[in-house]
Amino acid sequence: VISGGISSSVGATGTLSQTLNYSFQNLENYMNIPFNERILLAYNIDNVNRSMSAGEPLPSFMKENKSSVWMKPYMINEDVLLKNGAKISNKSYGTLIGYDTGVRKVNENWNGAFTGYIGYTGASQKYGSMEAHQSGGLIGATFSLYKGNIFTATTLSAGLMETDSKSVFGQDDYTTLLGGIGNKTGYNFEFSNGKYIIQPSLLLAYSYINTEDYKNSLNVRIENKGMHAFQISPGVRFIANLDNGWKPYIELSKVWNVDNEAKTTADGIELPRMYVKPYTQYGLGIQGLIDDEVMLYAQTLVEEGGRDGILLTGGLRWLF
View 1: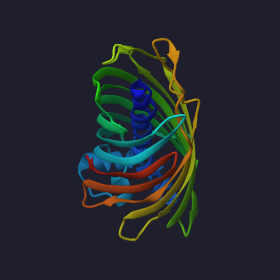
View 2: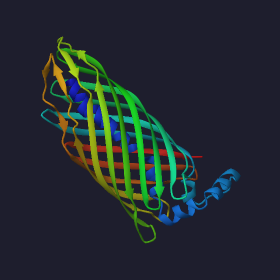
View 3: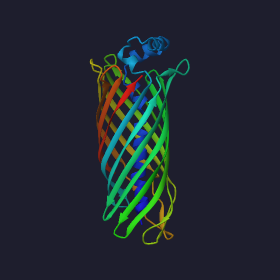
View 4: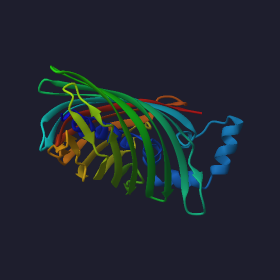
């Protein structure tokens, strides 16, 4: 009877949370560039556009500002300890495919960029004799703004996941709708003319998860109320701009979930409200151009706390 709550608390919220994180692709590409290069770019956008049209060679940082398409697969392997619930073994995976415009002037003080993306998502949970699998898709968009060393980006995403939950009593099938909005705002502190960057940021996100009501294999009526999940995640990234153009970084963040309880009843009886405890993420990553048109990036994060596991992501970005 707790299958629907588990899928909402662990599978859907975890998938949507990571999607909102991974959607800030343009922001991460652009804000890893040193300030003096970004200023030069901001004051030479018209010249850059003319050079692009003429097919002339561009400096590395100007290449990174071209429009692009990107692909970012990810995989998560974790144990999730739910308050008032079981310890869940969760695996999430998927691929996002997106399009970034180059950074363009919005007004005299701000530059901006637009990102659109679609993705496939999947997840599975195992606890006791129960096993649930989800698969689905999503679509989203991000708008990023930059002013000097300040950045802010807002993303919107919506999707659908189909779940099959199996036990010794049979199989239950149901659909979950999910949507969310997130904002990431931060500032770059630079040292040695931008060779080293300390980048504190704050991610705020809201997610809505709605699992349909259904009758399970024992003919129990399961009713799931819409779940409102808020996430607060301050973090910091330490970035090095190497002479060869590669940008390795170390990342640390803390994640608090607010009011993300799964509210479920079984034949009218309210079940314990389950939610994910706070957790810490830390790890390292790298990005850089591997030739004139292709950027490579990879990242590994470790989770400790309410979510305990490892997150792997990587991908390619094609410039044009």
